Amino acid sequence: MPQFESHFFSSLIFWEVVSFAILFFVLYKYAFPGILSILEEREKKIKDSLDQAERHRSEAERRLKEYEAKLGAAGKEAENILAAAKERAQRLMEENEQRLTAEAERIKGDATREIDQERRKAVQDIRNQTTELALMVAEKVVQRSLTEADHRKFADEALEALSKSYQR
Image (cartoon, rainbow, N blue to C red; front, side, top):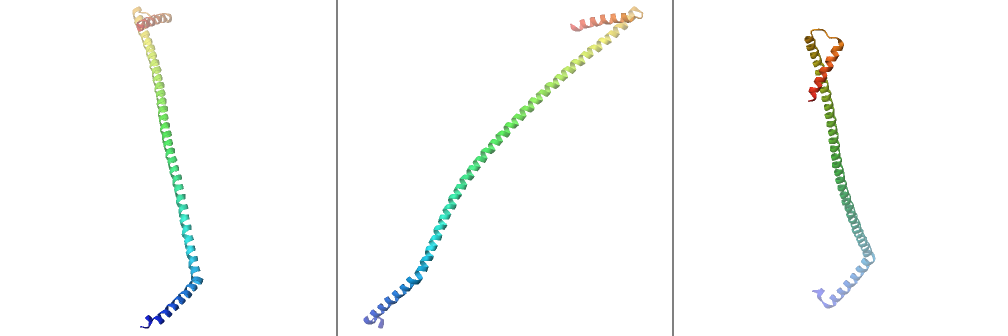
């Protein structure tokens, strides 16, 4: 095998090292700068993306805290509105109760006055009827027609007697 002979093997190694050095020089001069710039650019994009993701995460956390604060404030405001509505409803109920109580008192007063008025009217009617009855009885007893002055006198006496008996 000729490739394993010592004089042929050493020249083969020499040319392999020379061709590797030439290839390495060409790659170093032309290929590596492009590859390295692409890698650096890619590293920069990744770093920028990570920084942007961190900014977005911190912004999201800040907005979440703001949202939670607003949600808490809205909850408190809803509680305040509910408490105010309950208080207003209670106040309206009390006002209605007072108004209805006053209306009932007014109706009761009106009814009492009307009853008193009707009672007085009934007493007056009874007096008038009693007077007429007494006059008729007196006329029959006396068997004559009484004058107007007699009528008045008998009426007054009957009323007096009636009021005395009514006051007992």
